Each structure stands twice: as C-alpha cells, then as structure tokens.
Image 1 (cartoon, rainbow, N blue to C red):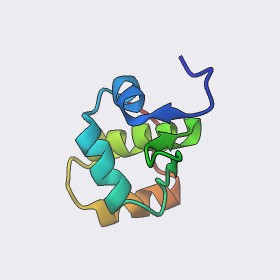
Image 2 (image 1 turned 45 degrees about the vertical axis):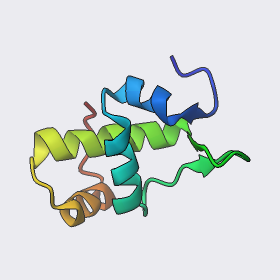
Image 3 (image 1 turned 45 degrees about the horizontal axis):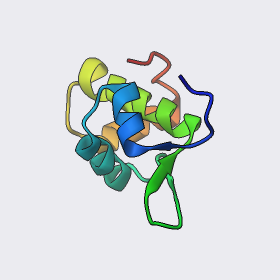
Image 4 (image 1 turned 30 degrees about the vertical axis):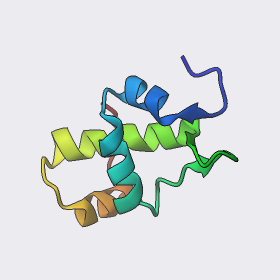
Length: 86
C-alpha cells in the first residue's frame, strides 16, 4: 500500500475511508499537525506521517470522543492519547 513517498488526496481518501472534503477540512482546522506539501501544480501531497495523523484524528473524532470539538482533538494529539488508529 504505502511504497510511495507522497500521495494525492484521492489516494489518502481511499486509504482512510474518508471523503476528501473531510480531509481538506481537517487540514484547514487542525493545521498544527496536518501540513501536506504542494506540487508545482498546487495539488496537495501527503506523506506517510500525514496519513497516520489523519487516522489518529479519525479515531479521536469518531470513536474516542465523538465530538466536533477540534480543540479537544488537538489537545489529545499533543498528549499522545491517539495511539489506536482506525
């Protein structure tokens, strides 16, 4: 699955089972942890580290706290509470 170095958002969406608009929203709202790079064509590319963070955010958002309080999610990420991934 992850032999490449960088992935486009549609690939990340497939890996994480999340719609691309959710990933884009999280990128905007939780940008302290999620900072994908850009290609020369302005497309976003995500590294393996970014995909793992997306999985942690998904776990926290949908299974751990089931809340839209992204400040709480950021706090839990900084405390390392998201060891399980979805």
